[in-house]
Length: 112
Length: 115
Image (cartoon, rainbow over all chains, first blue to last red; front, top):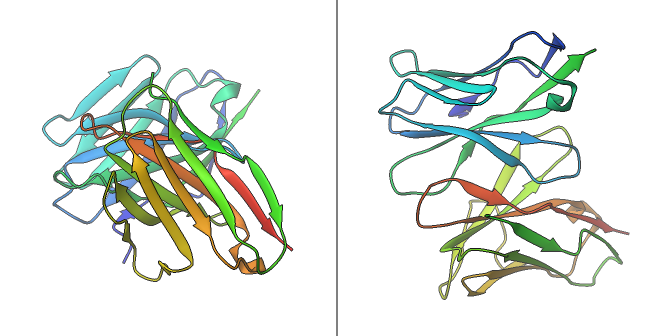
């Protein structure tokens, strides 16, 4: 049972435009959500997180939106840059358990 | 801050031998460390969680006798793949977490190839 789903395996966006990466979850106990970026043959890099008590968190070009009623979160990157091309993973955790439940990832390709 | 290193970055070993991978948190004390495995075009699979000074907690389906984890200090965890076989070839990634926040900081990964 996949508790965290990223239904788009890949996404192609023009440079300078907005990239929107989506993530859905099923477990209502999740209270902390994170986005990671991963290049091939490297470990993931933490990007941004959001607590379930918020519905938006912004950090520079990255904004994460959380819709608890829909059990949906999204990562917006604007403007998209070539260096943003990577695989983006959505992850969730519940309570004080640090274990992350991962989505399958979405490969973002930024076209020049 | 929050830098995690892994050593080695790549290792090739013969079938039947054992390989040790080190994971270090360089500038913080990690109360918890995690070991992941990534298969090609798949998400990260959590193998085990370890807290300093106690036995690791393994995920279902992960053989604890094959993947030995030692978390001797707040800055070092090791994963030893014992009696490695070609199917153990994979990309192994560790992460470390502080008490707060919840974010995990990942090492660069180790590519293991068993011939």
